[in-house]
Length: 104
Ligand SMILES: [Zn+2]
Image (cartoon, rainbow, N blue to C red; front, side):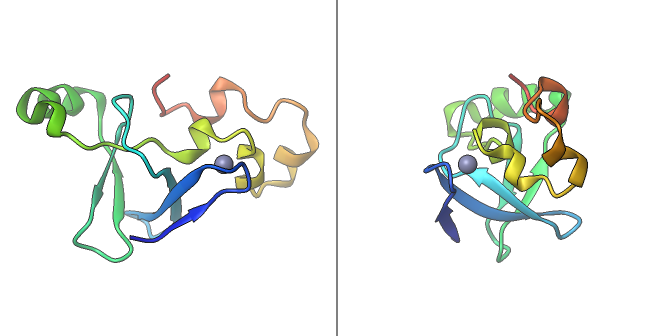
């Protein structure tokens, strides 16, 4: 799979969203992850798993469940991923609200 090193030094895995947008993920799976990837596609397609479904999946797959965290959620340089001019101007670019769909 296509991995690279983020400017922050972390290894990231490149996937695309179902809408075809590039989606950097932490290369390591995480028990806090909520993103599953379809590795049969190239690049892999990342899908955010709804919370209710996550619980079912955990029950079904246990520790074999491999879920990823969006790198935005952990990257100290997350602001660099955000292309909106407003994001660069402000001081608080990594507020919890920015990536509201990522569990913490
Ligand atoms: Zn990073």
